[in-house]
Structure formats: structure tokens, C-alpha cells
Image (cartoon, rainbow, N blue to C red; front, side, top):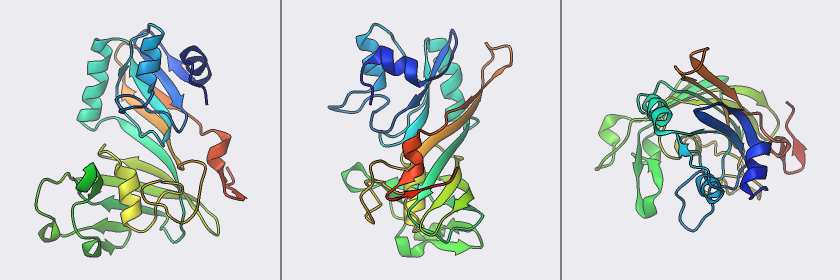
Length: 241
């Protein structure tokens, strides 16, 4: 993996203009703010470039990361994430089968011991009605919880894995990973939830992103970052594209 900023910036650039830089981040490097860890913002700063992260994806997740070059653009873009008008799409491969053609996971999240994100209710209280997973408000644990909704559709099935197109309608920390794991379909290679096998990476990828961008002639940013080849290789199998 590239760790020198000029090379990483060039090889991983998806789109750039006077206000933003969009990168296709490899799995295994943080966006910003991880203790004792090198991150994209720090690498850029060490080379004299100041960038402001518009959003974050987990260190283990690959794909689209949007960085602003100035605070004006940063404010315009982060407001869309805060208001949930940013349209985000991920690809995920679960180490399981049996998911429906499409589904909705509407399970509130909370923060438990060791700052770990979890569903804000006992696992056994999660119910499935058709293709929707929910929990009764009466079963919520005491303390603060955060309403969270993830929508998905199944793009491909193999004998052992499922490829999903996932839209997190809310942008909670670890949301996709926690939602899929707690309904019994963890993302393959997830160090928090997939104990089934050893994988070289976590199979979650930030694929597409659409936001308003008033400084551009088109009025929008419509970005796509295709996964690297390693995303399609799981164990001894290859997932068709």
C-alpha cells in the first residue's frame, strides 16, 4: 500500500477541482484522527497540503473519501451529511447466504463497553417482518440511542457469500457493519464480527457518492470509486463482477 502522499494522491485520485479532492482509499489506512496511526490528512499535511475531511469511512473500509480544500466548501458539504441529504452507496460481501432480494434494517444504535457500537436492545428482541428488521421501543436499553436505517439489495449470490448494494440512510459510526452483523450476516473479514475465517481484508467498499456542489457548472458531485481487484477475491473463491 502506498504510504507516500504524492504517490497515493496520484494513484488514488477519483476527482479533483478547486474545492475538493476525492480519493479511492485503500483498506488499511485511516482518514483522520486515529490515535497512533498514520492517516490521509496527516500524510497530506506532512507534504504541505491542508485538507478537511467531509466524512469518514472506517480504516478497514476501502473506497470513496471526500476531502475539502477550503473551509467554505467543507461547510457546504458537511451540512449535507448532517442533514442526511448526501446519497451514499456501499458494496458489501457477507460471509453468509439467505438474505432477501432487498431489505431494510431499522435498528437504533448505542455505544457499549470499550466504546463499541451495538444495537440498543438485546439481540433476541430483534424481529423480522417480511424483509424489515426492527426492535420494539419497549425493548430498548436504558441510555442514549441513535435511530439508524440501512437499506440493501442483493446483487449476487454464491454458495457461500452474498454481494450487497447498501445505502446507509443515517450515517452512524460502524452502522453497516453493526446492522448486518446483528441480523446474522456479518461482512466477510470484519475484525469485529466475522469469526468464520481469516481474510486479508474487510469486504466493505464506499462505492458511490452524490452531493450538491453549487460551485460546479453541473451543480453536483456524482462520484464512483470501483473496488480494487482484491475486493473480489475471498479465500479460494472469486466473486463474479
